[in-house]
Image (cartoon, rainbow, N blue to C red):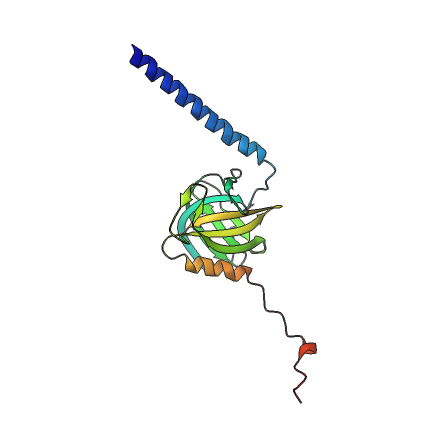
Length: 175
């Protein structure tokens, strides 16, 4: 009889723990209700300069890799297709609508080793820092063995154009 009582007590405790986890997740979603929704990716994007399958790991507040954004389909890890177009990065997470991170919103492209609940080999994650409305966020992607084409294509979107030569700074020794 005591085994049944112990078993029932453990089940009740596990049920209470699960209820608290769900309550906490929903509370985080309510606190993030002011976070802007990412733009839906249009069907008429320019030709992709790079595309790969991989995993979407997380989107966090910029510089805070433990503060997951859970709203607008960004809360759960999943398989993803990442493509880079002249307009920006198209991110299609399995089960979610495809979103477009505009080139003008991307502020940094880097490599990372960890975020939230994922630790990988050195530089095993691709970090894309971008502006989601008024909030700067970091999106972490696991793109497999050779992420270089995607990283290079994303960096080319963020590289500022070289300034035009200023005729007033011409070398004065040219006679």
